[in-house]
Image 1 (tube, one colour):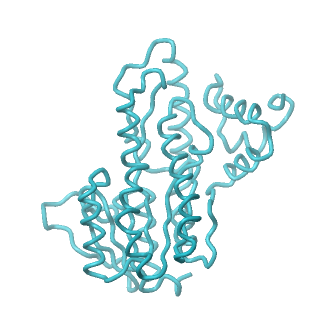
Image 2 (cartoon, helix red, strand yellow; image 1 turned 60 degrees about the vertical axis):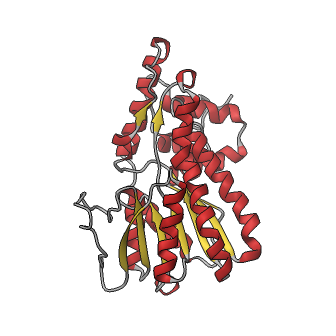
Length: 307
């Protein structure tokens, strides 16, 4: 793996924290030159500094990290960021879209504008990034695209449906890319993590419209389960290892689920009637005594679940 990534030029969005930061650091450890894109241009784990205060940093003897200011909701900013990498390096080998935005609330009061803001980073941000980077990858004869989705894009989570929709769209985007880009030696993959312990939990927002009384208790229960499971979930380094492994693989998988219990759930989703899957999700997020998804996957396929 290390040899395959030595000297590669990598762009990681959302690289100032969480999964993006962990991936950026690991790519650099493997010998890659990594451009860490975020709205404020911060390196992984770096606190905000005055303009001009951020510069390249070597995490070890192998690779180097470069800060890059990039607002994924701005076409010009994304194009300028990719152009700067190409100007400095002359190529771009791996593009990782790890930036993400979370929004919770009942569908009934989720306005189209709420959905648009959610999609702007998670989905349209990826489209902007691809539009800027793919011409260079085609011209140089190959490259890797890695989009960080979520198992929430396979199982729609109650009161987080806008987030689930954006991640489902990202998964379909990656699947289509694999077919379109095959003649150009560019391979696309989507990483589907389960619960991950990052700052994403605290940063999740509610839709602006107040939750109606009819949904209040159910939403409170569902969000509390999400927060509990995320904060008890795997570290972002585990997802980063899956990202780097995918980038180095000779034949990367189209979809890679990260998290043992969630791999079981995804497998069951392919085999069981959706009524069973729906009951599993309901038991997890809406049951009066919430059960962690990994426990459900491993122990709840019994007469109480099956119709």
